[in-house]
Image (cartoon, rainbow, N blue to C red; front, side):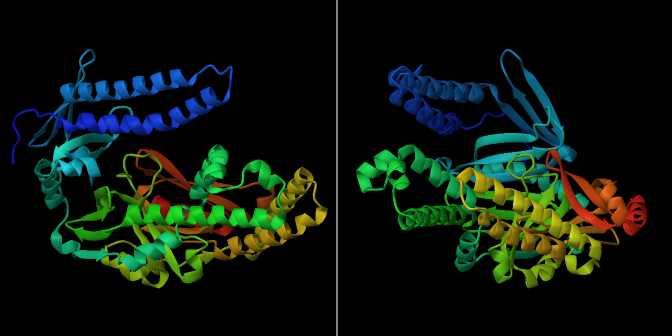
Length: 475
């Protein structure tokens, strides 16, 4: 379908901007309330904070109206044409070749009106702003844009016979297990602690939660009990967040692109071209590794939701033993095909000693700060000694044909597979201590989304430096 005239977004886009304004105002409103409400001589009185909220929401509505009347777009044969602005007018034309991927999402409010949001990832426009954000268009319009901008280019770039179709969906059980072992626990703990710190007096009055002053004078058993309640609350919060995010998760491969659909309240659909994938990251966090599961990420020039440095989740919860077959079915390289080199034995000493020193430093700092016995150091020394050994044991690297592999552990075990043609640089560096031990460190950089990402591994054998260099020169 050819669209000859410029079009505006739906009028509901004004409401979408207003709702975004509400989200932006919530945190400043809380801060203004506590600054103005708790301090007698505060700069912001509570009445002024109300005025600030009203002004911010008014600005959101005005911005929504401004965007609605000034933003126009037209889909042409070979690209998209965009006009926007009043005083400083912008007239931009973007060809199909510059468009990398798209993401379609359907939030609750736009879905009521049969609308959705479409984000189009474009390579290198507007000072590294890679997104065309159509925040309120009809479903039919989104499908027409997808057909005009993506379907034709994919037909010419990839033959159907080269990449066999594949599809997968997560069961409710897998989504729940993924939520139980997700990485959201620490951020959720921080959220719960901040809420408790700000509202502990109110919670004490309403439901009997002890205030911070009462906890200071409580027994160790009571303190431990309430810490357990905080952790449990955070765990429940992280489970709910993960289920909402990955509900109805499905994955499919067709015509050289990977299509990802996920979300309960806000349905998201994302398309990533196989040719745009820069690296594949397999992450086994400390919870999932105990049960033999991992999460698979994609590092691509398409990125996720327009955020620099954010990886795209290809599969949130997969058995480690099933990873080779899964990657093969989506025409992606598997770590099982790449012969790996372990670190030399001298590196074991370096990993263990470095981590043990860190454990000693943390233990001594806590002992001095908390005025505890020096014996507090021992658990940290043992923990970091063991962690150093695990980091050495898991570390590996290898290369085969056009792919390079790095495996390392910080908190989680990570395996990254790079495509040689997408590696920006391979950098070796060596300290005086490493030179005496005949080891060195390697760092690889790739261009993921609109930023460069770096991956490092310390203390590989310096005998492999020339071999890796020669392998990379074949690029």
